[in-house]
Amino acid sequence: MLAMEKPWLSTQELDNLQLGKLKQSVAYAYAISPFYRRKLDEAGVRPQDINQLSDIASLPFTSKEELRDSYPDKLMTASDRDVVRLHASSGTTGKKTVSFYTRKDIDDWALMMARCFRLAGVTPKDRVHITTGYGLWTAGAGFQAGVEALGAMAIPVGPAPMEQQLELMIDFGSTVMVSTSSYALLLGEEVRRRGLEKEIKLRLALVGSERWSDRMRERINALLGIETFDIIGMTELYGPGIGLDCGYHQGVHYWADHFIFEIIDQVSGQPCGPGEQGELVVTTLSKEAMPMIRYRTRDVTRILPEPCPCGSPFPRIDRILGRTDDMIKFRGVNIFPGLVDDVLSKVAGVGSEYQIVLDRLEGRDQMTIRVERAEGPSPAEFSQLAAEIQKRCKERIGVTSLVEVVGYGDLPRSEKKAKRVIDRREND
View 1: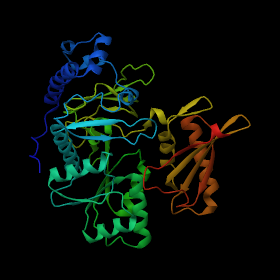
View 2: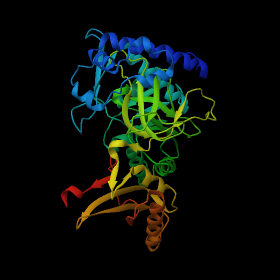
View 3: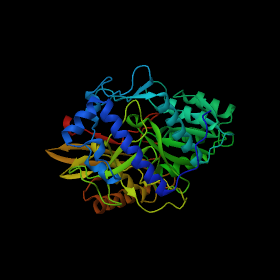
């Protein structure tokens, strides 16, 4: 178990700490990394030019394409002697994105993850059921390190069959679960189907890895009788555990002693104003083996400038709306799936599961939103639900779509990330 952290800093102390660590991180990257030295030189910026936090806007961006082009280890800034581990993304859209870790990086990550658990109310007395994958993926190893740093009991099940998940959860009395939202929903429905509600001891879950709606959160909470917390992270920035929403569930606190978050306009690259929606850009302040300067995450969100009711000095972002590369272009309109999700969450009688199907018929794009009803409404109400969804989509998003309401449980469930968008236009 790692030594516990010092009490949280005040907002002013946090700002001062950020500036000092930003100077150090940029100087370190310039001295050690040929990649960042070249980028800073091309931008006409030197480490000594950083004198206030706003100077970060003069630094060049780092893109995911640059990380993939640097595969396998061109961005590793520590020596082989000091690097103790690597992790990598799935690489489904190109070469894998690799992240390297020194011993200090691993310890920092574990403490950030332990901070997430503490914020959610997890204690050393809890038994934490880990359903996420181990191996190159960051999730399993990251969650386990955080559980152990906190002093709780880790139950490292990983992506085992549902029968084994439920057996171990009941036998060992798991009180906390970590999973993707899709898997939490799948498990909750299976618990309900088997009538195991009284045998499950879960009281809360940390859920991440994919965007999930408030409606889906409500459904998972109801099925399992728990409270869920939204955890964020990505391989390029350690992994999961760089932030969590608190018990007020009004945005996600991020660990500003280890990161600087910016929101930029995704087209111009210019900073967005307070509360404006844009692309999240992250700079690491503590990473040794692979620092990131102004990494364009492609996640769409906004900074929440108001203090959180919980009193934490750590700033917040809104829950992730989507990704810039997930944006749908439909009849000249740019649409994030999260906007459709937001519309559906405001319609009574609608469930948490939906799909957006795109076709091209006779040269014209067509969008069909397939959505499950909640468990209450009868099939006789489907047409009324469909008309209400169509009306609200037109008002909120500005497009007219077809709407197909299906029965509860009719859309596919997944043990991995849910596939929300099916684009068949290229095949038509």
